[in-house]
Length: 362
Image 1 (tube, rainbow, N blue to C red):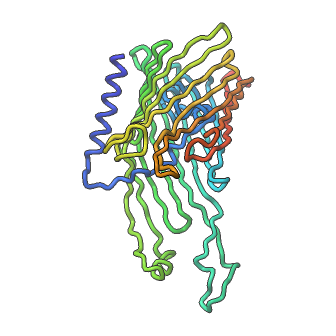
Image 2 (cartoon, rainbow, N blue to C red):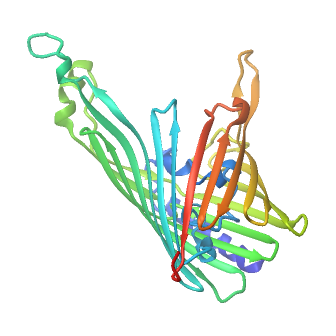
């Protein structure tokens, strides 16, 4: 316990030093927020409460330290989800491999985008005629590419890891950005108890934006707006904490419960614990299994207070359910999020797949 406490203190100190390195920088509260949606049907069914218990290829996203528990020599993962009545597409691809009994490496790609947006800037020609044949389409998409590494330490039960991530954001031919950042993580396994900590964007993550003003000049002049300048957008660090307990129900049945908290440092947010600058968003998940082959999951998250129709505040939350199946080398996970439309978030049906490959062959 002393070791995981030391690691957590170091992570927090890293966050504080990163946020203090330039007090004149303007940070965007929801910069790169597509990376906080979550990947994997298991995680989404458990309300994203998996920082301490993920043990597959999605560990690269949730807690890179857990990659040392990879169940095979090589594991591949994929997920596709639709949001906002199928307007937005969220896609995930990942691959992880064991380098040795005590280390692992993973590669991850995440994309969130809206495609086929009509560009009507040239709808009307120079003679004032409407020309539908001049309408073109473009996409607004965010990409993240992660390289993850994990290693077991000399202290029994302690694992550490991290991500190096490259961010690419594109808004058609109008604007684009490149970004870069790092995550650090730790995991302490004490038998039935697991404790995880992840410091995302530990050194702050930047996006260097470049605007194609030639594409925007006419439209901005007609509307009286100023052309945007090239700029750098900064993402503040956040700390993800998780604690879990695993238990046996009977010889064939087992379970686990996990409580996580997302700690942000970018100002007051509408979460359970809200202050300036620190806010804390707790979420809870549980999982039952039969011989580690069939899984039933549930979770609660996205808890917040919103104004109601009668001008009184209402407490909302997002309940989720899901199941998982493992057979041969294939894993299938399903999540039904926001059951009963209890929160402001839209409900979604989400599937994810994983496939295991060993050196001995299939």
